[in-house]
Image (cartoon, rainbow, N blue to C red):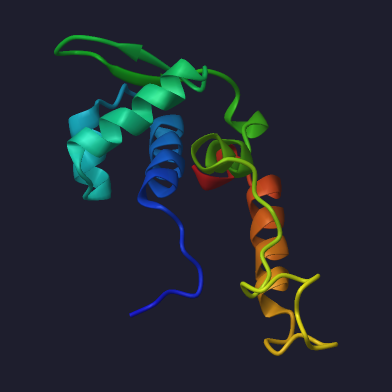
Length: 132
């Protein structure tokens, strides 16, 4: 079944993992986060590596190692995390594009653009601290 809104697994893992780490009193490792998110350990490890490389997380190796948040969860919004994985978000039209559409009004009622704007606004105004 097709989805109206598609969020990639990598972006979803990044946001979920950051929220889990931010809300945990102890370090969480890849295995624990993979279990909690029911995700592939290998895919999650790549996402976590990107978050560490871009200074969102600190990592400690070893049997008692794991990840800790680097920074204030109240100052990290979900848009930063999402765009780190997906790149800059743009307004999405129905697939034809505003300049090429042969109709004066959108046949989909402008909902694709409306949903995109609302999604970006949610990500921009929601911080990790609001999720924990």
